[in-house]
Image (tube, rainbow, N blue to C red):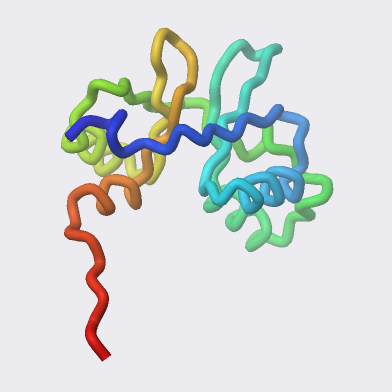
Length: 130
């Protein structure tokens, strides 16, 4: 199975000036665990995850003043839609992260998470008879 078969095509993009509260609200509304951070000044693509927001709040930082830019991972490993799920899982395990931005022709087209991979590899949850 390939990354394109497992990835979420709901790609939330935010700017580096979004507050963490704004990012969290957008992520919650779209039911995603990560946002792609596009910084036109830096010319790159980064990622902000729910874990980044949690760590900031856990440190006592104010989510209304903290900006995405300060918590964005810019050293991102990208996946291609044609990667196998094994390749994606290996990259996640090697890098110690749970989300990969999927790029096609240099543009973000999806995000694949550990949860997406598990959903594809594990059998569907079955109803237990009452």
